[in-house]
Amino acid sequence: MSISLIARDIKESATLMINEKAAILREKGEPIIHLGGGEPKSKAPISAILAATSVINSGEVRYTPADGTPDLKQAIIRYTEDYYKIKVAPENVIASSGAKQAIMVALQAILNPQEEVIFPAPYWVSYSEMVKMCNGIPVPVLPEDGSFQPRIEDIERRYTSYTKAVIINSPNNPTGAVYSRQFIKDIVEFCQEKGIYLIMDDIYHRLVFDDSEWVNVYDYAKEMTETSKVIVINGVSKQYAMTGFRIGWAVVNRKLQEVMRILQGHQTSGPSVVMQKAAVGALNGVQSQVESLRVTLQNSRNVMMERLNAFKGIRATKPQGAFYVFVDFSYYEKDSRKLANFLLDKVRVATVPGVDFGLEGYLRLSTCGSIKDITEGTERIKWALDPDSPNELYIGQRKLVRDWL
Image (cartoon, rainbow, N blue to C red):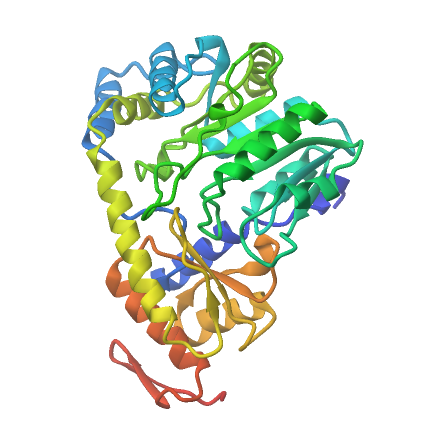
């Protein structure tokens, strides 16, 4: 079979792949603990459910404008004013079928073949593949100091005449790092000086812990002008636990919005009217559920860090936001895919290999699950890896005997 050169070069999403494997094993009755997932377990807001139900009950489930319904755009405009302190127009907003599509359409709108997109590593698994799908060149940049906090010097060294954009994701998936105010200021000034796009993936921006500060890009890119090259991405998936609703958006200059609208119109048309109504319900409804989720995730992070600190030889940096811990397991196994498959096979714990985020030897562990999942999952991992652990472990009624150490 003949397939395109682009398709041959695209890897399957590591996070979706592990979700599928875990689901298949769970359907077979296996006692899976999923520490690889990227979706909160809390329910969607009742305001979102009622709004979606009202549309379904009306029977008027029709096409929508390619860039989103007027009421969703107004909700996004209010949201942008509340959290970004900037007033935008409907012509600056495009609603998409998830933040992932918003990023993809933005890249398709700005990239020419062989142009480069820089992003700090570790990075969300889809950035590199999205850039390649646009015939562009992904340029991941690991901080030279070995931390998860990028520096402007790291970005500057990878800049070339082919650089078209920089993607920043803070709080970061997979590390949970919240980038400093100085770095956000520096990256805004750098992109303005070079005349390149800055894509801010802010999908986790309200899920920040302790005294950490999420930095609003518009503190430094103060105006939404017709020449602005700032692209802000957001959505309802993470903060409202609405991953399956698939509603995200981009805030951009008017000319770019028009191009993105045309592209999206040919791809998928507008997002589902039912899902858009649900998003309106979430955005306009009581916001206490977001704070409740943030507090729950912060507590879950604390429990996981306490458990991980009992391991011998691993390194885990305490996350400042989002719902992941990015853990260096290279003391036990440097091949992260091999290690993830080993843990799924031997103790039925699903994790995501670090190599897919741009850093080998690590695993991404999620704090989205219950405290029971976190404690039992980390206990199983420790038992599988630590030679000082007891030789036997019970998973439910099943007795496991370790015969590989």
